[in-house]
Amino acid sequence: MKNSLNLSIGIILLSVIWVTSVSAIELSEKIDLHGYGHMSYLTADKNTFLKADSGGTWDYRDIALLFTANLHERSNAWIQLHNIDGDSRVDWAFVDYTFGNGSTVKLGQIKLPFGFYNDYRDVAYIRPSTLNPFMYQDVSEVIPEAYRGLGYSYQSAIADGSILLEVYGGQIVDFEDRGEAFKTLIGGRVTYSAPMPGLEFMASIYQSGIEQETGESDDIQTLAFSVGYKPDDLDLKFEVANKNVFEETIFSYYGQAAYAINDFWTPYVRYDYITTNKDKSSDPAFYQRSAVLGIGYRINEYFGIRMEHHFNSGYGLAVVSGEVATGTGEKNWSMTAISLNFIF
Amino acid sequence: MKYISTTFMLAAILFSTAFSITVAASDKVVVIVHKDNTNVVDKQMIVKIYTGAVKSWPDGTPVFALDQANNSSARSEFYADVIGKSKVTMRAIWAQNIFSGRGLPPKLVEPDEEMKKLVSSNKNAVGYILSSSVDDSIKVINP
Image (cartoon, rainbow over all chains, first blue to last red):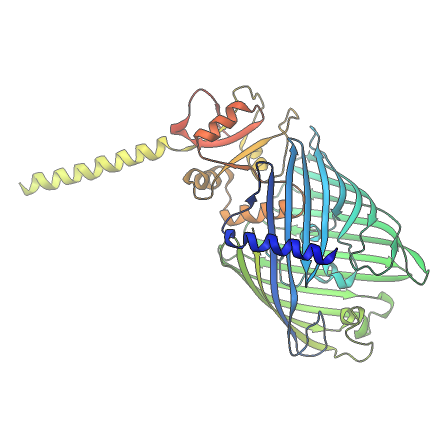
């Protein structure tokens, strides 16, 4: 299945390479093809994280194809195929229907709505940096990428602002195939867009359960609060998330600022923190802090490049990923990431 | 002789400038809807439609939004003067909408004649054309 999916994606990619100057490819009057991808070089001066060590790695790349079909004036079908470091999967595949009051129902495998970035955390061209904030990184396991089930959203004006309510239920998709079984998932996200242009407040929550291969099981509760202010060229974000499972708490927050100097250059800074076990948060093996300095250059509306440096303290996520053993990592270390991103 | 030539040149310059201004003013971009669309539409509504924030008209019927090609001068003027956002900002907005599964961008059509044909035949459609292309097959709204 994986090999034939890889071959299919490869054939499609070869046939569309020469048309990269278009916004989307119209396969028919009702079916469009969009896509994105990135290739990154990562290096770490000490420790090993995301396969990056002092020798560096190019094994941080992906490419995705999104097919959309307009079924009806109120309904669309979506399917996204994704190849990450050579492994292919179906990211999401669902059908939606929009009612007259502006509410929308989705059925299928759907990106889990949580925080500012989870809906498009894989899309390097539009996310804020090469490496996502810790809470959105796959290795942190704070926020699942997708669920299978039913989702409902409703938007309404409120005073001079607006509120978007999203609720969903189903089951978490286990992309890592860890042999874990997830129980029924329910969750929601509320976004309030204030009358002040660009100011948003958000609360996200999901509850599920997990049973590991060992037979051990527990409930999962994850909650996040988010504030964003994006008046025009300035983009400020702050988010905090808390996840409880197996009597352990994963706690993470970040604050980020980006400023589009012009249509081409966008420098950004971020302070990021995560503890993979709040009871052991003073142990470098159970926390990771990062001060990030980066700059992005938009070559055109299809290609962009980005370079960033991470000044890290603690190696908690490297322990979670299995790349560093507890007690053996270097507390103070740094990483550099350079990426080429594209979208169509 | 020299005085007459200079005066003639100045007059020619002024006339051509006035003429070009007149042409530019008459080619201003206007927003159009079907003649039977009775929804009250303001600028905020148009911005919300073209940024994907709303998918329905106030009466609950679905919006069928139309757009022109990237290299169209009417498109540049529409997004600068009516929507008030740069090409880069719009790209980012729709990339987020598309890749988060929130919505699809307006359908691209050939300028003016095809735009008018689609808007005049679909009660839910909204688009934009140059004012010089306006006729009585569609209704112009002033957001």
